[in-house]
Amino acid sequence: LAFGLLTWAIGIRALGLTLEDLRWRPLGWAGRGFGIGLILGVAPAVLAVGLSVTIGHAGFLPDQGGVTEYSAQLGKTFLLLAPAALLEEMMFRGVGQVVLAQAVGRLPALLILSTIFACAHLLNPNPTVLSLFNIALAGVFLGIAFYAPGGIWTAWGAHLGWNGTLAALDAPVSGLPFRIPMIDFVPGGPWWLTGGNFGPEGGLLATVAITLATAV
Image (cartoon, rainbow, N blue to C red; front, side, top):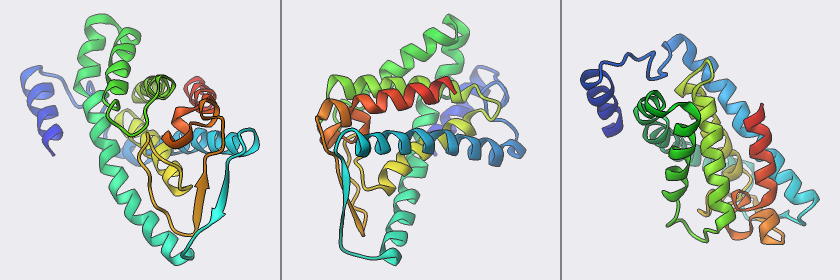
C-alpha cells in the first residue's frame, strides 16, 4: 500500500507520468499479462529443479501430511508470496526503472536496478556470490518482463511463478525455507551446481534456466 501511494505521489503527481508510462497497462491486460508472466516464471523454476534432480542428485522424500494438507499450506504460501512479489516489482521495476531508463537507457537501468535487487538479498540465509549473481540475473529477466506487453502484470506473474513453484516443490526461495507437507526436497550437490541450502537460485543450473527464460 505504501509503495502504491508512492507510485501515485511520485510517478503521477510529481513527475506527471501516466499509468501507461509506468507500465500499469489497462485492467483488461491484467489477467492476460499476469498469466503469461506466470508461465514465464513457472517454466524456468521447473527446469532448474528438474536439472537438479537429473544432474545434481537432488530428490524428494516423503513427508508428513497428505494432499489436503499440502493444498492448504500451498494456498497459504501463495497468499504470502503474491503481495511480496508485487511489492518487489513496485520497488525495483516501477517508477524507478521507468525514470532511470529515461535518463540512461533501458539496458543500463536494468543492470543498475538488478544489482540493487541482488544487494537487497544480502541478509537472506546462506548467500553466495553465485546466488547474488543469479538474483541479479533474475532482476534482468523480470525487468525485461516489465517491458513486455503486459507491463508490471507480466513481471508480477513471472516473479510469483518462480517463487511459488520453488515453494510448491519444498525448495528454499532465495535462502528462505518453506515447510510444505507431503514432500521434502533434498537439494543434492555440489552446492555450486544445485544451490544447496540457498535453494536452486544459488546454483549454476538456475543460471542456465534464468538465462533461457530471459532469452524467451
